[in-house]
Image 1 (cartoon, rainbow, N blue to C red):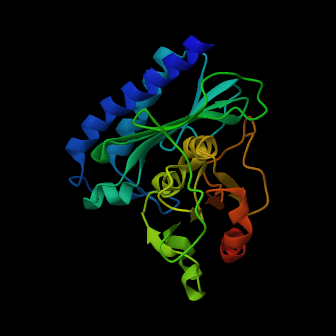
Image 2: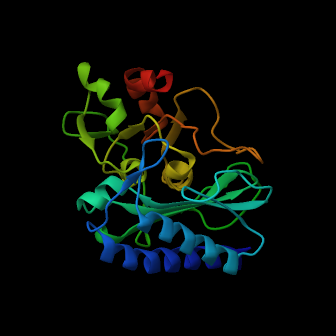
Image 3: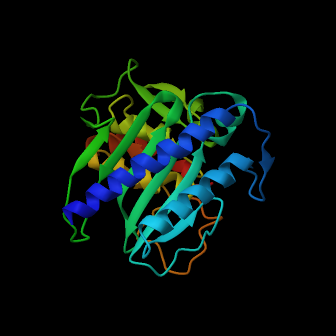
Length: 270
């Protein structure tokens, strides 16, 4: 199993850097179109999704794939990769350098390995989280190979909390931290994992937005809370996840859940 995890990390590192190099050349140069759900897509999104899918099929023949730009149906496979080829397409098309490639590896429907690469920031986040899967292997969360951990600080006006564009109603009430808006679901929550912010909320993320970061946040000591009171994982075989959103709150430690959840739980009711 140890060799397997080494292969998984090497694969994720290699494919995201290769795809990321091409995406950098397209950065800020492509026009986006709207998909049926209103989100943006470019030919670069579709190319990257296809390249990663083909690479998975060549390296891990028995693994399934669920991608933002390909199949949205969770396959009947013990192992499955979930791909977000460009998380932050709006930033990508508008010349904002915060966007990434996100991969989550699921075992029996639940993520156990996550990898997110932000090419223009030269940041690679990854982590391992086995839960009650019975799997064993490397542990922890990392940024560019160095261990990361969530902050142990208490909230204050010198600390940060991340919102998404659909959660700004939070601003109508007093809030214990300064607010930031990143525009990339994965990076919004990864900043909790590396201790930069104390929490973050996403109102309408899809499964490919959170599959990879779900692992990394928890491996770093954070808490991932569904705001609609429904478990996200394990995913169900044969279900179409193309339109389902998973409103969620991420905080740096359990003790902060009572502080932040009442302020953002309306997000799960919209």
